[in-house]
Image 1 (cartoon, rainbow, N blue to C red):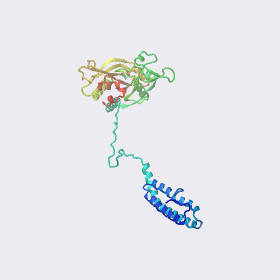
Image 2 (cartoon, rainbow, N blue to C red):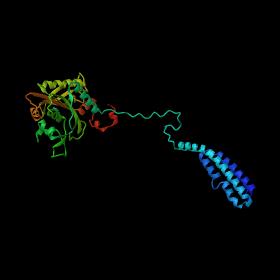
Image 3 (tube, protein in one colour):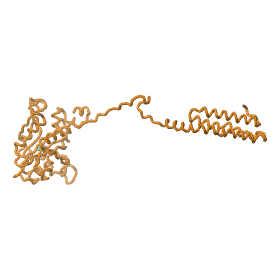
Length: 364
Ligand code: PHE
């Protein structure tokens, strides 16, 4: 319908009725909330057919204007009512559309909920390090023999690590331990313990006798790491102090421990040695657990492996901690846990213990 220059009542009434029909059709045919909003704007907004018709009123004949205006207004009201009825539904649809657009799909298959969720990747839970396992086993063996477990600090004073162990300042035997000193207090007064023997001193100093204890722990020496040495390693120390303790008791405890820990085929033997804190002193050896004594590479064909040191507590050590050496006697022993782990697991190089290579770690 082309717009005449001076539209009369008849034209305007017909045009308003057509705009109302067309408006209803537009509103009704929207299939999304967005389409409905667009239709609302088109049929009820400033540029809608009815709004345009309103602007033509001024050109209608004077007598027709009132009735024509009323016809436009009636069409507008009817269309608004129609739109309002539909818009309630569209409001609800719009909310749903927004929610589903904002929805985060957290299922692993985007194909839909019919599929089961992915199983996920199971991570290994890991296990204790070979050295820790060995230490725990050693503790268990000694606890079963009636020993208690004691611990001491890794940073020690010169007194505990050397002096109370019968090594006064400048004693030549101090050279048996390459020491790492800490910059704390006067020079060379605080150090990283070079062995677990200072824990003996702490135990005896506490004055609670008798003592049947083992003392595992980390030790430090200024050594270059190689196949058989680590600058950070572990020892376990044993100390027995009671009335009437003899060298024979010591030999018996070491033999009982050896068979309990390694099995009935493995035995121990003692060879004379020297430590400033024990007198007499010995080195103890065990049957090579790899070849059971027949001789192999690990034991250099001897059938024996040197494990650690031991001896009767020196009276000077008792004096330093105010234990009456007329009444009490005792023995001590100590050996390397890492070294023991190396022998038992037949490790060619001790440095594997520090590499943290899972291919190595998972073997134990
Ligand atoms: N502490 C000594 C060392 O590290 C070992 C030892 C302990 C020797 C107890 C005798 C008695 O070499």
